[in-house]
Length: 265
Image (tube, rainbow, N blue to C red; front, side):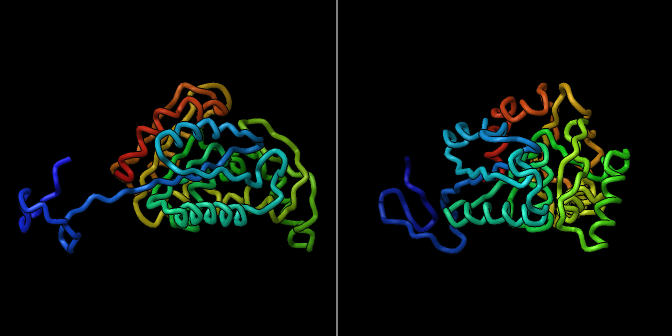
């Protein structure tokens, strides 16, 4: 590689060049990715399909088990989950990553966006088959009764007592025993998980790769629902992928890797 030159040095001099203010220099940038799995998923998690490719590309990654995993079923609040995700991002910073991206699948995508809004400290978002839209679930009547039950229980001092409440995944309702205070943190339409509000509340334009499935299952919201509510960033993309909700992370590996470099290169 030819030597780096500035106007005070020549190739013949071969003198070492020490960085000074105003002089460009090459900086090695390491990217870290926090992978956030989807609702009712279990290890090895659908989003784990990205791990080998991220490693091969030189990226660091972390894949925590979150409260909506099948073996946990909301055993912690949404706020606690956001704290956990922020801690994972901070761990990547501590490990030397100059850029940290949150990459979420389904409810993990919802949590990625919410973390960016309510905790900050991230440089970009990858949202794969976004899911869990509490404002839509309430408006469509799926969770209205459970929200009322949970609010009543909380008001009467029973917010920490598990009770049967409705969850919905890809159009499939399921009754789960959940603490009312935890339930409201995930399902309140005006809460921290609401998609359009979170997109509007992003503190600054943030690069987002938003991949929506074009397969079976419940129809996802269109581009105008939340994506266009966020301040525009030149690197942001909204794309449809020929995949089912669960299979989308595996189908999106090349798209994810192709999108990452512009954010930190």
